[in-house]
Image (cartoon, rainbow, N blue to C red; front, side):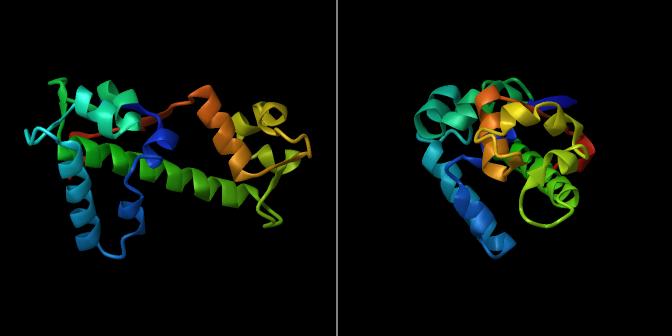
Length: 159
């Protein structure tokens, strides 16, 4: 099933401890703690009201994450969304590094041609008009446009 997940927003969720954790066990414990904090009625699912209260980015993407359309987000659905967002973020980061031929942490107009969507909006993204794009400019542009990233979620690859 094809889903659209706003990866920049999901990364901004109040779960930065998950990404910083050193081990899978710590990641799972941090995730469980975050989930319990959001699940104020202890139903085992995050309702839209709970998401709006505790995690606005989840609320904004609620319908995209609620795969079974039951009105509640399970741990599995949220984990799946995090994993998909992290995969896309990682993939994009790899593409940015590959495009940055001189390894200066910036993309020139020429380097940006390796990324057609970035190249097509280069002038709009280049907020300080210096002819170079940095990750902050790209992230700000994506955030401002509410650009979504397509993610294919297959039931055979779910945790």
